Amino acid sequence: MRSRKTIIGLGAILGVVLLWFALSRWFNIIPASRFPTPSAFWDALKQIELRGYAGSLLHDHAWHSLRLIVISFIVAVGTGVPLGLLMGWNRKAEALINPVFTLIRPIPPLAWIPLAILWLGLGDAAKVMVIWFAAFVPSVINAHAGVRNIDKSVIEAARMLGTPPFRLVTEVILPGALPMIFTGLRLSLQASWTTLVAAELVGALVGIGFVLNVAQQDIYPAMILVGMLTAGVLGWFTTFILGLVEKSVLSWSVRGRA
Image (tube, rainbow, N blue to C red; front, side, top):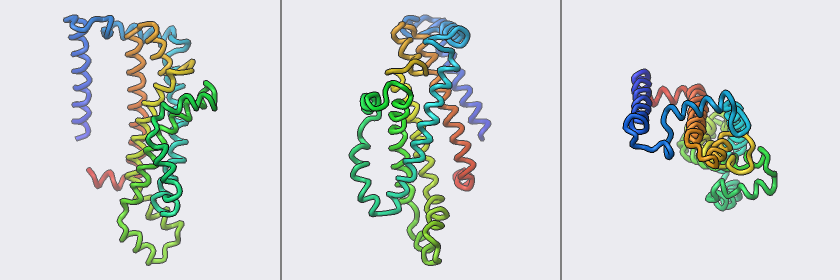
């Protein structure tokens, strides 16, 4: 089944590439000034990787963006998941924290950019703050929902058996909430990549977002497409790694859904 899905996926990608060739090169339906031909894309890819563009080579831009994502994602998970678990488990904590969280939750992550620059300057710390907020919100919400979705009879049974509070949290609450937590992590990772590119459009000297910004100013569609696809590939790669982690941690759940 998995190999069949892989073949179908590769066939879909090949179909998109052939359609791209047909519309932009063979039939000239899409003008090159608006969307690059495959050959123009290839030339731009060679340029940024061999000679550099926007001050660095492609792998340097990609590594910088990937590093920001990893740092921001780890900080968001390390703060958001425990907070969500606490709010889902403790009614008093929820009553205290939820009003503040509900107030800041609707604020778009990009709205924090001016404040982040004011507080932290134009360096990477400001970008980490903005990306952190984007990833923080889904991790809190899904960890909270994961605790609330646990069957109450399971918790009551554990209490009747005299399970200490620490073991109740680590052996009942956390395992029961993990499927929803990983759902939140996937959403957080997606939000991180979306916010990263926007955050790097302002005050950056390296990164995928910076490449897109410079290419837009240079009116260079092929390089814009290189930056977009690089972000897409890196996003797919990080999602794939997270999926492997989820499969390892929740092997029992994955087998149950198969």
